[in-house]
Picture 1 (cartoon, rainbow, N blue to C red):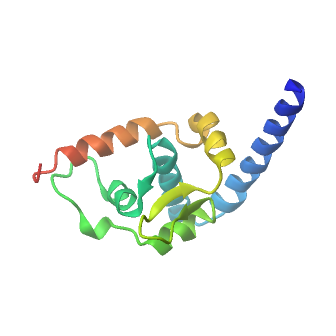
Picture 2: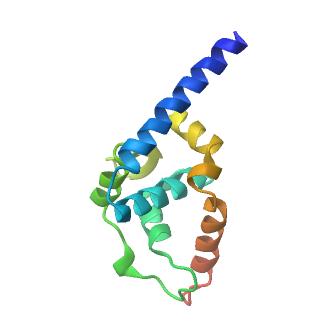
Length: 135
């Protein structure tokens, strides 16, 4: 039974590896960078984020002293570059999620490959946001 689970997990990893290489890395360089940033924030967050929270996290730049509204990316742009790997609820919650729990598991296991500085980047975003002049 243990061997069977390991084989399934290995198969899922291969499928997600192919998805990441084809869907995400197969885009234009700017889109690849943005898609990986979105996936990093969503997978490194300690809880599901609302769309507005994700947008603010993506727009926050290290050292900023205030919110940068021109950096806000539209919902459609986020969904376009993540190629179905990220979903945004259409109800009033606007919760952002990875498409499937197995994707979250895969990205957690392979975080060093896809987002080697993901945790540090998330910490920097949080610290920068907390240092805004409005706080």
